[in-house]
Length: 162
Image (cartoon, rainbow, N blue to C red; front, side, top):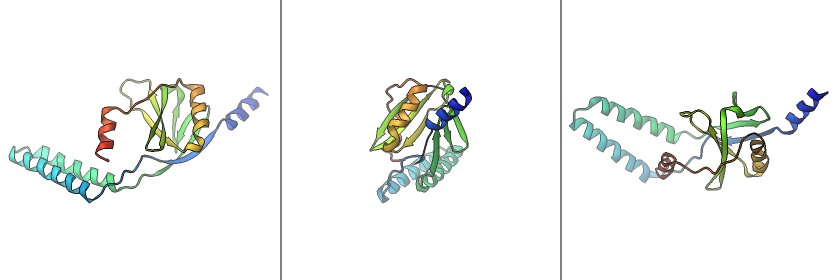
């Protein structure tokens, strides 16, 4: 009888939603011109210093960044239950994280999961404002909530509109 109760509670406390994997920032022609100037400048510096491996790195990084910047973000399906957060086929259990926080970036809300492991990356999950209270309540039942801020690298990425 207890097992049936737990299963019904798990279904009751389950939230499903879809969201983009990241916030796509608009880039105009000036952004690509500036990017090209920086890449050509770094390539000229690498050629002048005869650092051909550095030149190869610049070319590969520039191509990867352009491909990444023109690719639209995927829409991912999320499911939150008493087991943890499912992102497609990936399951992030609550035991892997020490806390969570909520960020609001340009009216886009996200949960930031802070990992227990020292060098593990945090997990950022965007969610619709309409489901926000329910999502935060489920996370709050399993993890302590901490204020989170963007680190220096995140601020640089947003400044460069990557």
